[in-house]
Image (cartoon, rainbow, N blue to C red; front, side, top):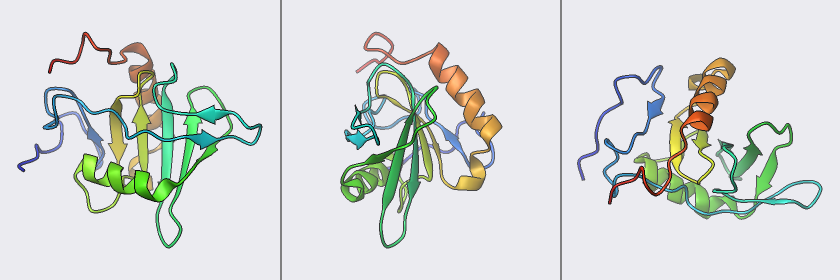
Length: 141
């Protein structure tokens, strides 16, 4: 499958995904997962708020989810299969280091490495995602 190159507005090897350039049905929902917080709260994509996902690979895959505006990072349950699915979805041999998901569960930005995702860039992207979440009317099948 021929995958499109980086979006013209991407920076530092980070890639912005837009419906027009995604080769999988025009857009992609993030693979489903549950993340458990210390207080027992469960998070999942499409919960009504943007999410920031942090992936650390290695021998023991770890994925943390943080809801936009929260300070707590919650552990994704059974992260290895989710990380494999995310790697396949984003077209890489390994999952991206960080992913931003909009309030409706749509993949909006993937950063291949930690260095690609400066705090300022993540904050700017979350602001843009907050302002323009995808919904069923903005996705054409």
